[in-house]
Length: 121
Image 1 (spheres, rainbow, N blue to C red):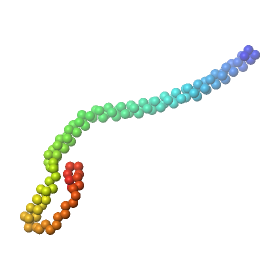
Image 2: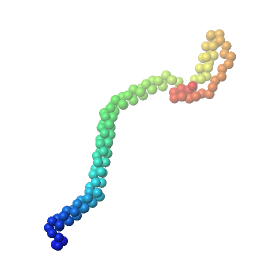
Image 3: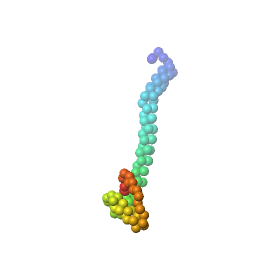
Image 4: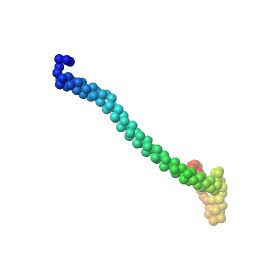
């Protein structure tokens, strides 16, 4: 390098420095910046989830009270509904009402029972 002049040596070192900087930027700095941006986006999403969870947690006592009210309603309604099938009793009542009303039941075709959530149809 001693044969080159000072200006030429500076220019060669500047070009080598630029090439090294370009390699560093392409292989290390660029991918790191992309990863940092992805992590920032991920962090924003997680912070939104945390805020959502805090809001839900703040309403937890309200949800518990509502569940208690619904369970009390369910228990009250369960006491009203019969625990067993009462088809025979229902048929006897229909027959008795028909007899009291002077009606003749000519044909009665019961179909298969279709179970529902809280009753049988």
